[in-house]
Image (cartoon, rainbow, N blue to C red):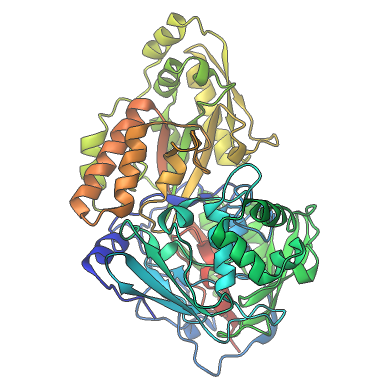
Length: 619
């Protein structure tokens, strides 16, 4: 059921036209992030475009709901003894604990989301929907304070038979509220910040709880509380009773929290290809982690204890296949659904496959954007001489990158000149007109050279880190050719074991993948002024109080005009500071065996597999 808007404040915030900041690094691999598309199915409203199933048998059986939410498959839907194999690219699975910064990325999330169920999901229209298979939530007080009640379904249990309860969400809150050295190595402080008292309940093992927002509704409150890790597992591994764990977290018992956090930080860390013991990784979603071959695949099996609609097939396999091999693997039947590299050749191959009558495809915009981030942390040449950031920006051939790598597929693609709103969104033109003067649209090597010479910086080495995807190598090659004339030595670090999240670069080339959130940019661009350190996803150590203030205002604003003004302010600041350079919005390409019903691609970061538990081969 699509969630109901409960107040004017909620309607403005949750229903904003903006696809503001992203949650996870998107397209960090050679996936369907590549060179564009001519068909802009999302250009008007952010929705996935029309699916073209061709005439292949079985595709007409796909359940198509009236909105962007999941289809109602009916009470008679059962799990088939079947295997479906999908590949989103070569990026590996890394951990069951997706709430640690080093594991929180699009590819890990798409797998873990099948295992750990949530109160909500994002549909193909980028709207937030309640997940009735797991539970429900409703606003019970709109002010003094804004209060939301969450109810977990009675049938929602972990695969070891333990009920999902408020205790799991106390642990989830603790991993947000107690971040830092000797505490949780968590991803975001938002749950702990905006709900300072934590979940409220009568008994820790209740299947309902409330949360209070004393400062008013957090803009992304619907996406603040979703899935949770198993508190009973953490308690047992810490040597505590579950009630002890809950009490320690709520009461702020520092010694106990240190022990709990140590367990949370470590019990799910294993060598690649080795799953933790089964009792450590129970599922409360439709699938269970079953087998992991490093660099090859992760296999999921249907969760027989799942209380919601059963999984469509008994085995769902995520294979880590190079995107250049996707179309051939799809044609051979080795894969059943893929997100291939978008090149002219790949698109033609996919279209030919669809015309043959046994496959379907979708091409349309994604809520993902490519960018170059500039590192201001210790050791970077920009930390020592920030003026060099302007010189670098002046020599980056943004228009040439667009023309050489994107226009051959989508001749209408334009440079992206904002971070918090995308080209296809209605507010984009107004925001860019007020925040950016076009100073980096064209290369100015002469001006760049003057800056470099002024600071006696000829020969400065700039290491550009990325994931090794072919189009990104091509991007760096274009930058090398242009910036060499300005006196820079550009080093392509795309084939090294560089850690983007650890900030081990001078410039990073990657994508942020959006999910309809409004205020998550605070975690990406903001500075924690209490701790005097960057927020968890602020990987380039960017520090600007005006930007942090703007995001903090956005997070609780109920005024759409005010939100837009704050976006203009922060965009102006990030252009003046040169946080980095946005490049372009990614289009998306997907293909699948059309005998498999209920495949419905989405532009959101959840990608092709957002509803993979509904996939089932037509009889």
